[in-house]
Each structure stands twice: as structure tokens, then as C-alpha cells.
Length: 321
Image (spheres, rainbow, N blue to C red):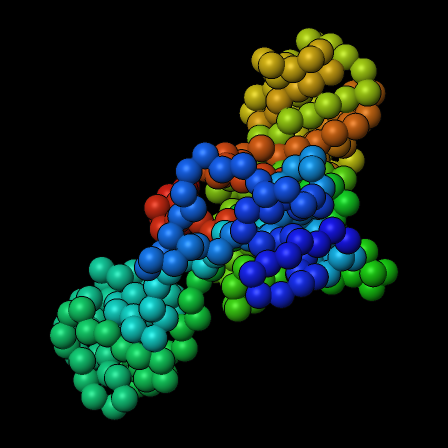
């Protein structure tokens, strides 16, 4: 190791001010060293490597605390922000299914609603968690209604649990909310696209009942080109084993790569209805994606992710005839 003499001792290494690493000659300077408070600012030790003075990041094997993998991101947006412990009385009654908020205001003013044994007639009155709400002498238990929209990926079955241990859609939305929510309708294992979950039984019944004609639009890809006359036949109606069925619309996908890609609009909720319709005409469906359900679309919702419906979307679904 090279050494040089200093004014106070011998054998010091050449890492002091004005010395080059690995040499005995003082480093050349173009000006005075920076000072702080009248004293020279100490210089940091330089690396023995002449290639670069920028230190390279160390791997975890070298003792670095930073991992090389990206942290896992929750697949879904957070719950809507609101104070569940402070809710308007009319909204509480509406969530319980007693009536609408406007009708709840009328009930409150007539004096038939009480909180903790005290009759409330004040509009805008707010209750807290644990308050006992009674309407016409009966205790009301209101669960907050949740509405979660999932863009289902392939390989998941639409069921609450599976005795065979297969992946279910519930594993994709298990942390969406603390309330127990259920899928509205079904998508088979190999079908992707929109699937709604809720604990609002009335809405679920409405959206799955054929009378309300909740529209569903599918992007279909078949094993061979679809003939134009078959699209017309789908709209006129075909006979299946469980009755006659017809599509509201059936046309080639505008941006599709070939005539194997078809868009079909239908309001029936029968099991595997789209696949069975094409099978009846001699086609095998190789890809099936539900791109619209009622008034809901896949906009800004990546595959495998979920989001909570907005209040406006919920209101629109309730208004659907």
C-alpha cells in the first residue's frame, strides 16, 4: 500500500486531502477547497475503480433491503368514502327497503319513526351506529347496499364456492367490501366480461328476470367465418331444446379481423344461451366476452379488476324498465 508522510506521523494512507487514490502525488486542483464555517469541508473517499464514481445498486444477496419484485397491487378500487356511523334517517329507511328516501321523509314528518325510543320528526336527522330505529313499532335492520362490477377473466366459475376446489369469482372480489355480496346471473368458466355483484336482492331479481329485459352485449369469436344469412336467422329466431330464442341484434364486429368476430345483443338470461345459439347453426364459440350488462360497460375496467358502481349508475339501474 502506498503511504506518504504527514506533519504529525508516518504510515498514513493516501486518502487525505489532495491525494490521488492509489498514488503518492497530490491531486491537481483548479481552486481552493470548499469550506464550511472557516474549515475545509471533508471530502468523501473515492473508489479505487477508475471506471465510474457512481455506485451500483446492490442486490438482495449483497445486503440491500429493497426487493427486486414489485409489490402486489389490489385488483379493485377502494370502497366509496362515507361515514357509516353517521347516516341520514331517510337513507337508513331506504337502505332497509321500507320505502324511497322521499317517502321516508313523509313517514318521518308524520311521527311513525322513532330512534332509541324517541319519535323523530326532524328532516335530515342523522343516526349513529348502534341506534335502534323503529317504524310503526317494528325494529328496522338496514344493511348498506353494495354494487360491485367485475371484469371476469377466463378460468373462474360463477359460484359462491366449489367442492372440487376450482377457482371461483368470489376470490376476485373477496376484499371489495365487508358485506356479503352475490353474483347477478352467471358467466360460464370460459366466458369473460362483466359480472355484477350485490346484496340488493330486489335489483338482482329485476336484472335477471326476462320481463325487465336487461340488455347484454357479447363479443363472439367462432371457429369459422359466420355467414350473413345466419346473422339474420339469429335475429329472426331459432328453436332450441328449451324453446325459441332470438337476438335483438347480430352483426359483424366493425374493427374485427375477420367475419369470425360477431357482436350479439340479447336480453335472455338462459344458461349458455349464446354458445347454444351458435352451436345450433354449426359454429363453435372459441371466445366469448360480455362487453355490456344493462347500462354498464367495461370502460376503464381492466380484465380481472373490479370497481364499485357510482350512485348515478345505481339510480339508473333501478330506473331500468
